[in-house]
Length: 341
Image (cartoon, rainbow, N blue to C red):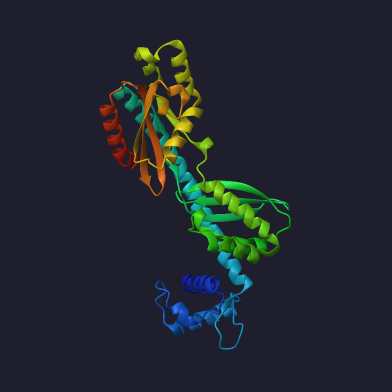
C-alpha cells in the first residue's frame, strides 16, 4: 500500500506533534490540525493503516501512536528532498538577482557622481540581525561533516566540521531534526545558555558538533566585511577642486577608491553608529578615513527591509553643496526599494 496525500499529512502531523511534545499522539489531537478537516473516526482508520504499514507504533494499549524508524526515515527523506529543491531554486534565484543588483548599484553610483560632480560610492546590501532559517548537516568523511546554514534573506554559509566520533546516517538524521526544531527562526541573541545546554545533552557524545554548528550560525549571521561589495564612480572629479588636486592628496584619495579597504572602514563606522539616523556628515578630521581629512564625506543608510541595509557615500571638498548632496541622498534612499523591485 502506498502513502497517499491524506496518509502523508496525518503521518507528518503525528511526527511533528511527537517531536514537540515527546508524548504518544492520539486521533483527537490530530483532528485539530486546520488543514486536515477530517473526523476523529477517519483519522483513527488512517492511523491503523499507517501502523499496519510500519510507519507508526502504539507503545501501549489504548495509547496514542509514536513514529517508527520507518516513519522517521520517510519524514526526513521528504524533508531533505523538499529542502534540496528549495535550496536549488533559491540559489538560482539569488544568482539572477545578484547580477541585476550589481548592474543597478553601478548605475546608481555613476548617475550620482554625474549629478553632483563629486566622488561617490555605494555598497551592496548586507543583512543585519538576521534569523536562522535552516541547517543541513552532511557527512563528507569519517572525520569531516559539512554544515550548510541558511539565514533570513537566503544568505547561505558553508562550514566544514571536524568530528571526534564517527556518525552513522541515523544519528545524523536525528541531529538534523534536533538542530532544526530547536534553532530555526531564532536570532543569535535568542540562542541562550539553556538552549545550548539542552542541545548538548540531547546530542550526547556528539555535543561537540553542536558547538561547531553554533559557530557556523554566528559566522553566517555576522556581516562579513570581506564580502562587502563597494561600487565607486567619479573619483577623477576630485581634480576639479584645486584644494584636493595637488599630487599627494589626489593620489591618496584615488588609492582609497581603488583599494576600497578604507571605504569598508567608513561603511562599518556608518552602520555601527548608534546615532545613525540615515544621513551622516563627516567634515575634515571627523572622517573615519584619514586620507579624507581634507574632504567632507556625507553618507546615508538605505534600508530594503527585513534587516537588509547598505550605505551610499559622497566625497567632495569641504565647500561642497551640502543642501544638494543631502537632498540627493534622501531622495535616493527612498527610491532604492522601488529601483530594486
